Length: 161
Image 1 (cartoon, rainbow, N blue to C red):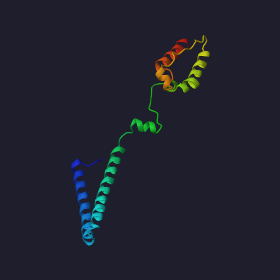
Image 2: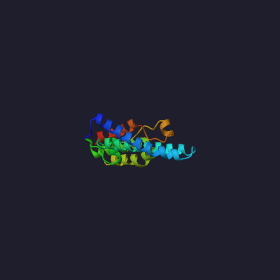
Image 3: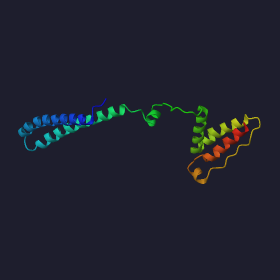
Image 4: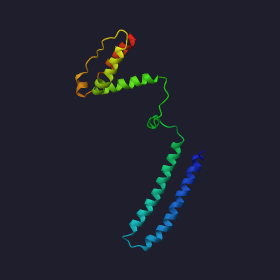
């Protein structure tokens, strides 16, 4: 577990103070031996060394703190872990297909609508499927029918089943 905050701060202050003392002890004689044109380079290198050590410590600390946290939903989706759901897999697939059909007119015409018609033909009393044409804006953006129109068409099929 983590030590108390005061102890952590004290430990960090002492360790960074020691680091600064060591860097100053090495840099002072070195900069005194160099020409005035080279001194800024030595000071910049010393400052970069101290800053680099501090950044490495900050990244390590951040990594340790995040390691103990449960993964976010975004990380779980990236890893391919499906969040537990009470909804049936077939209904999730239907929802995903309806979203794709509403987003893409091509997907609607070539995939979703033929599947919907084939499903309707398998019913004992096949209904005539009709969907309101997409609005001008949806046509210009090459979108499929409105989600409400798709939902109504699927609902009509479910009523007949």
